[in-house]
Length: 211
Figure 1 (cartoon, rainbow, N blue to C red):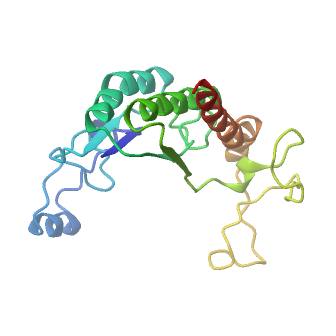
Figure 2: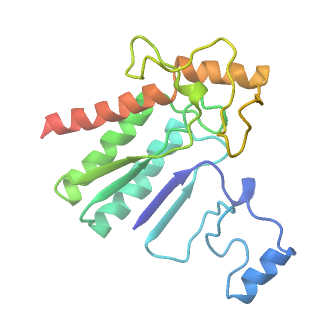
């Protein structure tokens, strides 16, 4: 069983290029039109597969919407499915300070979500739960701080750049971060990815102590 909670929905950022060559090719292969099921990029709100629970939460993921979905949709489905193991794809881009701007969750909200997942695991599969960290987080959001666990030798110069790697960006060329994006990254640094990871781990620790 696959469960996905995310920003979006067919009415928000659905796939609307039904006359494109790609769409016609997909339809010839037996695909369905928009609204009939999940297709990459559509972020639709339905699925023809019994083992997929797709839950778009609107333009912005909020704690209220996340909590409601977990209680009213996810928990009953997971309990009915009775898994042998729960695997979390731990992504924190729904945080309120993430530069993408699609989330409204705090680090503490992620701890609450983790605790709910642990409760489902204890009830359905003897507490077997695994968390895999998603990638894609920019270095500027992960600057080292004295009170956190990042490496002390990370570059912390005032002028920060997006390092895309030598294959994409030559070593002698710098891609400067625009001022507005830099402000977002600063807020993400103040509380963002690292705090989310810490609270996520705290959720596991707290749930483990209960048992």
